[in-house]
Length: 211
Ligand SMILES: C[S@@+](CC[C@H](N)C(=O)[O-])C[C@H]1O[C@@H](n2cnc3c(N)ncnc32)[C@H](O)[C@@H]1O
Image 1 (cartoon, rainbow, N blue to C red):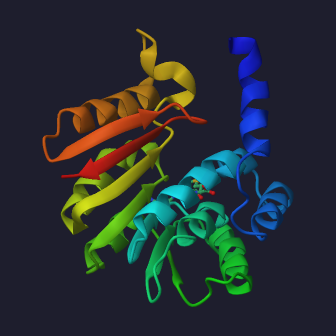
Image 2: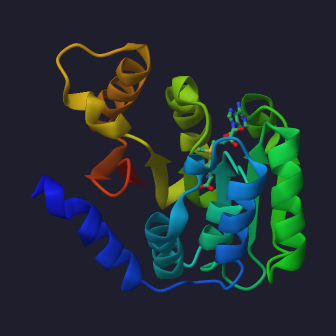
């Protein structure tokens, strides 16, 4: 089974909708201009984000960790008319790349990019969110969750990336980063305010629904 997984992922890629023609451009630029292009969501995960967003038709989305803008463009696909997406990026160079793509995209009016540490920016956001994507520094996952849970409406989804940490979460001896992720997953599964489902797509996405 392990051997056929890459081929299965390729098959899924080939048979999943490309939700926006700008996405391959962002992917190309990310490989040319950044040092860690593997951080990008990519086609399959991006299609999942777009599909979830289209299903719930959010008015207000928050993304923590913009990178070059790929996932923001995916999440924006489902925005209802007049809705908006706030995305936060710490690194100025990444933010500049994302900003150029947002300007070029059909979402230039509806995406607001904040540059800085999300931990300083989130407390000043007064929106009530329908959809949140957490994809920034892993040690702060629990902090981000605690900061945003009361800013979510009932029924909102919080999607959290990299929750399988290359499969290391099931190892008996866990390094520091793996323990952060494992502790976060434990925290979610014992929080009675939410329901959750971990999807083993790419590096694992925790789909958390506020009751
Ligand atoms: C894995 S990448 C995000 C990938 C992006 N969501 C995508 O799918 O294309 C994580 C990003 O979070 C940013 N980041 C890290 N710590 C942050 C913080 N404290 N506040 C805001 N952004 C942060 C990093 O600079 C990096 O660009």
